[in-house]
Amino acid sequence: MLKLGIEISQSTVAKYMVNRPGQPGQNWKTFLRNHAGGIAAADLFVVPTIGFKLLYGLVILGHGRRRLIHHAVTAHPTAEWIAQQLVEAFPWDQAPEYLVRDRGAAYGDVVKRRLRGLGIRDRPTAPRSPKQNAHVERLIGTIRRECSDHVMVLGETHLHRIMCSYADYYNQARTHLALRKDAPVSRSIERLGRIIAEPVVGGLHHLYGRI
Image 1 (cartoon, rainbow, N blue to C red):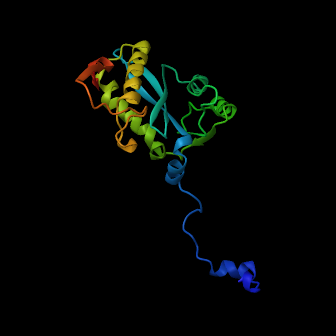
Image 2 (image 1 turned 45 degrees about the vertical axis):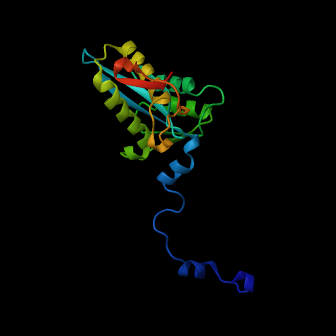
Image 3 (image 1 turned 60 degrees about the vertical axis):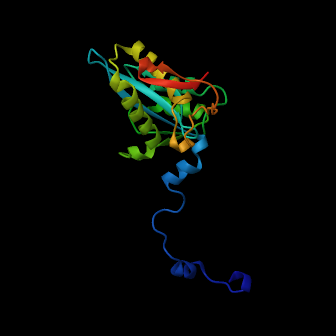
């Protein structure tokens, strides 16, 4: 109407505008989908040892290719320890644009300062909303079902060694429907040669290839 030379007050326009439900802009699911390539997600999970002690595993997952970027094990997950793991996970210019995490007490001020120092925008989920960090929650469930639930963990060093072996298998061999049945570290299709099976993760899984 302005282009027709008809001026209307803002209050009149507001009177006839349709009210949109909820807040304008993208929702959380849309944000995750639109920015997947620049998002990493972090979370902690608990693993009991053979002596009934509790160890804590930290995993950091890249949304874009579902790659397990970093993992670490400790008996005491302090904010200082998590901050150090972030530095080790994102050396030089490899830091993502966003980090999605829950609101656990372990992510203290030290972690927040370290994220700012790395140029990463902190994106904590809403309270009591684990589905907002669904990709890393699913990764933890996969680690439990395919690895830690089938192993008697002797201690911190033992769990770290198991996680290293599983991370190699997860990134290089385990396929994902979201990646069109490719692995996080893309694998070429092998069409020629004899098929062999190589046991990994203590025989829990196998790598299949051709020679």
